[in-house]
Length: 224
Picture 1: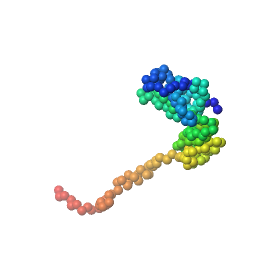
Picture 2: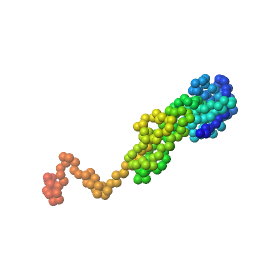
Picture 3: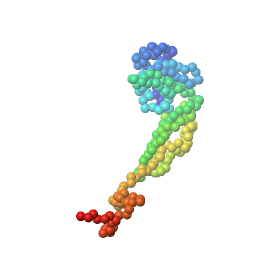
Picture 4: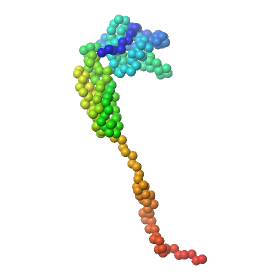
């Protein structure tokens, strides 16, 4: 598997002023840790880093050349300037072959569900799962075939096909995809509308019944 390659320059711990100068010169201060050795402080080329990491997931391993020393790591966290939005620091977690790692891997759904063809609506509640594996086995994404998914049925994490050397840590009961039918709108028919109007004009409880045509009333006629 080909990984994005980054060139880096080792740096010593520096002051805030020096870090500011590095950033103005197009360098991103970063640190690589987690490999069992002391953390390595480096400088990355800003443009190269953005180009290499655009569109990748947390599970994408990067090959980093630090002055001729080859290291592998993935982006654990990055910080941005609140005003400019520029990346000002990157934390990289080193991966070592033979030592298991935990990482979140995105799910990629493919296929058109049977239920959608029948008029259902596809929902995708979960977009990633957490896995444990050797770095060499870490997938960049997990493919999930949803073409056989019927209406009012769902696919759970437990339904994902097993991947050799990869253990999924996410709850097996988590729903990955489900097809639901939209609720039909109630259309009021003319007959129903007439019934509603008649009910609305009915006499209120306790009110005197309406007099029949021609029936005498209790009121005396006024003398003319």
